[in-house]
Amino acid sequence: MVGKVLDKDFLWGFATASHSYQIEGAPEEDGRGPSIWDKFCKIPGKIAGASSGDVACDTYHRTGEDIALLKETGAKAYRFSISWSRVIPLGGRNDPINQAGLDFYVKFVDDLLAEGIIPMVTLFHWDLPNELDERYGGLLNKEEFVADYANYARVLFKAMPKVKHWITFNEPWCDGVYPWDPNDPLDVEAAERKLEFSISWFADPIYLGDYPASMRKQLGSRLPTFSSEDLALVKGSNDFYGMNHYTANYIKHKTTPADPNDFLGNLETLFESKSGDNIGPETQSFWLRPNPPAFRDLLLWISKRYGYPTVFCTENGTSLKGENDLPREQILDDEFRAEYFRGYIHALAEAVEQGAKIQGYMAWSLMDNFEWAEGYETRFGVTYVDYEGGQKRWLKKSAGVVGVEFKKYIKDE
Image 1 (cartoon, rainbow, N blue to C red):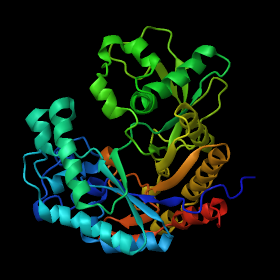
Image 2: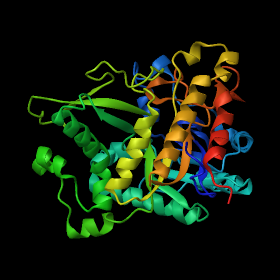
Image 3: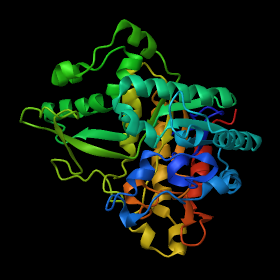
Image 4: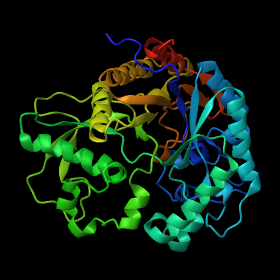
């Protein structure tokens, strides 16, 4: 049985990145410019129900309500992202700053801190200013994007010095893995390679100074080589490792050579093992199958590979199969999600007991929101949002479970 293994200042709370597109709404108010998601949502057939984030949870007009929800849950911290195009509507380093947009976030941070809630801010959660995509292809233009992103970051750092926890980019990787056949060395190797092609692609240069050998072996000259100047900027440049996690998969090796366009490690990703074991129960999200032990194992894998760094779990949560079709009373009694949090928080405590240095956990999500291509058909929130009833909010059963579970594991002194 795991006891109180978490530090008394452990930060737990909820996340709603992207504050900007998934919950915020108000895409044309107070000078906000369009993002690539505003444009993408207008393409017929791309979004379930032909919906968009134009209103979403209407958080732009309801920050007080959302902070009240956080207070009611007892949350110690809140992770959210900022709309780049609300702060710099055209996005570029030589483009004007929208002071009204910047002031909105400054006030929101102040309001959180006034209620004793620590802000954890993500700079980029997929909603690139559309103008930068049209100017030079967005992230595909290394020189221009880096210069514009660095300027955007500096604007926020200067405006919000009270924020002490910053996240650069959302979610490089979020899945745990097991070999399809644990007795087959090639599947064991493929499972390791899957993590290297996913996590280590981003983390190895920061912690170890280069890309993993398995990636260099498969990708060859297509993988960049760091100059000494680049490496000086990259290696050791972070203060903590932020991990989003939802699900797990079985990994099976392929017997054929890697496709020239493959960047995943030349392998298969499956929900069922060779012996017929299912990785976890179905949810509304086709890609999500709960498996708490995989969370523990992934935390330990990261810890061992990178010398036991400080880790924050920056997202963790689940959808429920058919939840959106249920009457409100049943949606509020979300035992499946409550059990998910019980299992995953216990797995986190097990990882800490075994040496992982985890200092925070943000449950996804504070409220139901615009779930990208799935529109509003998939719900992840611990708060029910009535999209057809004026975006009214009701806390679900799971909202109270997160704090109750952490009380079991956080030290009193």
